[in-house]
Amino acid sequence: MTDRFYRDDPLPSLPLFADTGVKDTSALAYRELVDSGKHDTQVAQILALLRQSKPLSLREIQRETGLDINAVSGRVNGMKQNGLLIEARKRDCTVTGRYVTPVGVL
View 1: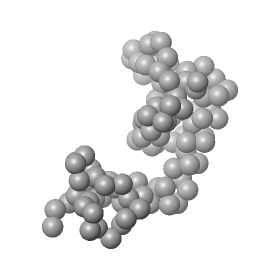
View 2: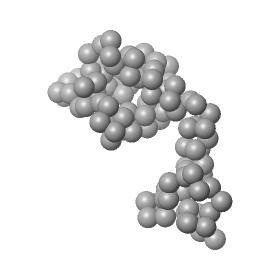
View 3: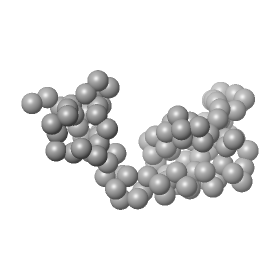
View 4: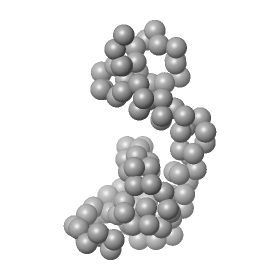
C-alpha cells in the first residue's frame, strides 16, 4: 500500500489526495483539525482580526492571534482560495522587516 488516499480508503469524508502528493499523515491531521472545530475557530479568529485592522502579514497575524505560523499560513491560504481574503499592496512586515504581501478582507 502506498501513502496516498485512493477511492477504497476507509475515510470517504476526506478529499481524494491521490494526485496531489499529500501524505496520509497530513490528510489525517487536517481531518482531525476540522473535526475538532479548531479549523473554524482559527478561521474566525483570523477574520475577526483582519476585519478590525489594516491588511496584515502572516507573522503579524501570528503575533496578534498567538496561533502557530503553520496554522496561520494554512488558514490564510485556504481563505484566499475561497475568496475570503485578498492580497494587499506589498510592504515591509513590522515583525520581520521583510518585504511581504499582506492580506486583508474584501
